Length: 506
Ligand code: BES
Ligand code: MN
Ligand code: ZN
Image (cartoon, rainbow, N blue to C red; front, side, top):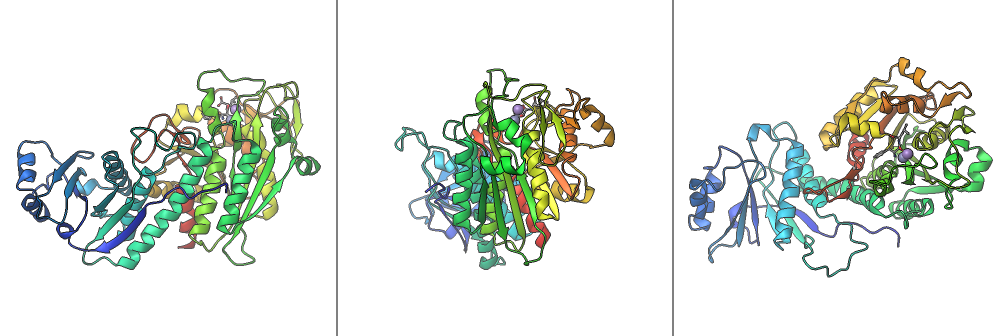
C-alpha cells in the first residue's frame, strides 16, 4: 500500500463536568488574570491546595504557553490536572486555540501521557464548531512524525496519542462537536499526507513515485486519476515541462486528478501544484549549502494532493481538478542550457536564461493544460522563488493573481485556517522585466521583485481564467520543530485551500 492514514488516535467529544472525569489527565486552559475562577477552586480541592500554593508562589500566572502539572489525591477520579496558560481571554484566536491543542498534545506525549481529557476554549469571534475544529486540528497535527527510516524502538521516542476526549459544556451539542472533529480529521489526513510526500527523500521520491502516491491516494479516496507519461507529453507538446525534465534519468509525469462532488455540468475549481521532486538548479547549479532541502520543491504538489484527499473526505459538493507536473531538475549532458529556447504547450516560446527558474517552466504547461477543463477558478501553489522568503520569511505565503475577489477570499481563508497569505502587486509594469529579445518571454526577470516577476511569467499562461498564484517557498519546509510542526515538511496549503473550498459551498 502506498498511502497510510497518518493518525491513529481516537478523538471523541462528550458532555460532562470537568472535575468529575475518570481520566489519566484533565487539561484546563487558564487565562491571565482569571486564576480564581470557580472551576479552579475545585482544582484546589482535588490537589490538596497545591494549585493555590503554586499561584501564590508565582509558579503559574496564566501566560500563553505556561504549564503546571498537578497530581490529584487518591480519592479523585482524575489522576492529574494539567493547567495551561492561555494569555488574555479577549485576545484568544482560532490560531491560538490550535496552538494550545498542539502544545498540550506535545507536552503530554513527551511525558508518556497518551490519553487525556481536554476542556475546549471558546473563541469569542468564532462559533463553537470552529473553536472545536481548531482545537482538534492542533491535537492531530502534533501527533505527526516522519519515521519511515527510523527504528520502531528508537530510545527516547515520544509516544503517539491514544485517546483524547474533548469535554463539552452543558449547552454544546455532541453532534456538532462530532462534525467538527470529523472535519479536523479529514483536513489533517490531507496535511499529513502532504507532509509525508515532502519529507520523502529524493532517492525514494522520483517523479514516478510522486505520481504513484497520488494515484494510490485517489483510489482510496474515490477520486479519478490519470497520468500523462513521457510519450504523451511529447505528443501533446509540453515543451517547457520536458525541457526541465530532460536533464534527469527519471522520466516526468503529468498527474491529473478529478473529484466530482458537484453537479454534472458545474465547471471545476482547478488546483495546480509545482512538483519538482528535487531541484539541483540544473546547469545553473545551486550552491551545496542547504541543497538537501530542495527535496521539498514539490511542496505545491503535496498541498494540492492533500487538499484533494481532504475535499473527498469531507464530501465537498464541488467539482475539482488537480494538475501536477512531476519532474526532477538535474544537470547532465542532456540537460537544458542557459540560452536554450523552448516552445511551450501554449505555443509561446520561452528563453531559458537560468535553468534554476524551472518551476515556472513546468507550471506554464500545466496552466495551459488545465485551461482545457474550462475551470471557474485556478489556484496554483509553488515553492517558486527564494525572493519570497526574503520578502515574507516563514510567516506567510505570497498571493498574486488576476482577480481581486479571489485573492481576498484566499487571504480570508488563510486567516481563518492559520495559514497566512500576503498579497504582492502584479502590475503590468513588471512584465517589462520578462521581455525577451529572442522569444515571447524569458524565464527570469533579474533580482528585483523576483516573486512578482515569476508570477508575471505565469500570468502570461493563465490569461484565460480567474487565477491566483501562491508562492509557498518560505512555508513548505520547517527548519526547526515546534509543537504541531516537527522539522521538515509542513503540509502548508492544505488548510487554506480546504477553507477556501468550504467557503464556496457555504
Ligand atoms: N525552488 C526554487 C525556489 C526556492 C528556494 C524554494 C529556496 C524554496 C527555498 C526555485 O526553483 C528557484 O531556484 N528559484 C530561483 C529563481 C531565479 C533563478 C530567478 C531563485 O529563487 O533563486
Ligand atoms: Mn530552481
Ligand atoms: Zn525549484
